Image (cartoon, one colour):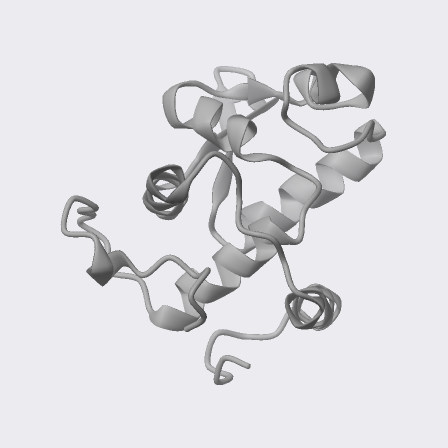
Length: 147
């Protein structure tokens, strides 16, 4: 694991009833660091769901959720990738799926660690971006060793 990858065993205060493999944690950490989202979005998601509309265009920038204005399609694509890596879940109501998103237990674990490390997410390296892009494109399975 790199020094920017949260290690659940390094912080005894981070307790979860679910045990995650190092590869799962590393992949989720890398995926978040490669998105255009900022830590305040995930901090808010620790306590409440966040509607998709709060993240798009200038609204997302003003709330500190994104680094730049993003279209609805771009935001949704990024959020769907974070669902696939296990960091987020989509809210459900009596009518079915909604446009709101929340953290999973893995997401809570990582966000708590990032908050303890500082005010922002660790920066992604060029290698992180390449590995993340390949994982997204090929949807690499967990049984492959981490790169």
